Length: 240
Ligand SMILES: [Zn+2]
Ligand SMILES: [Zn+2]
Image (cartoon, rainbow, N blue to C red; front, side, top):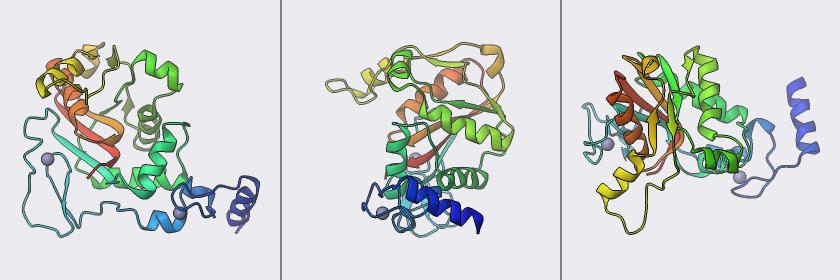
């Protein structure tokens, strides 16, 4: 009751219009998206068919066997999963997270609950996909670190923001470069700083959104080259 009252006070104090439909957001727990738009957001609940390796959405209907999209065959991570589709509530929240280091209660709950449903049981170290120094200065924070911190607190796993660094910022999708060229330029952008810490570890890479998986794959490659055992990827959302 009190929290409901407090919530409506907050709504009065900070009128927030939904970033999707522009109607008012009635609970501050929902962040920048209203309840109705959240309810239309596809959160993965294990009833759909996804690629067993990269988590790509394949069908609304479940299958009894492991299915692979094969576009991720050459990726270096072991398994990638996302909480839901990059759409509506999730895409609006992620765009907002790139502007301010704030995670609504709803997003946090979703991110944590979904984590425990994923096949990440043997993870022992959490690493956010790093930003370059220059990008970090521009933005003031790394949105992947914000998420990684939240998850580390809930799981008591080691948060490691130092072992993997990004020396320069390169776009994965560079115009005028073929696939190999792009991969090479991204690969050179990541470095492992503290090899001892990641040796034989099962690492969970955290990012806000999974698109082609190229960046995550390069990070996994670099980490494994320096002795990491398994590398998993977990994001809030993934593009379809
Ligand atoms: Zn809305
Ligand atoms: Zn796949």
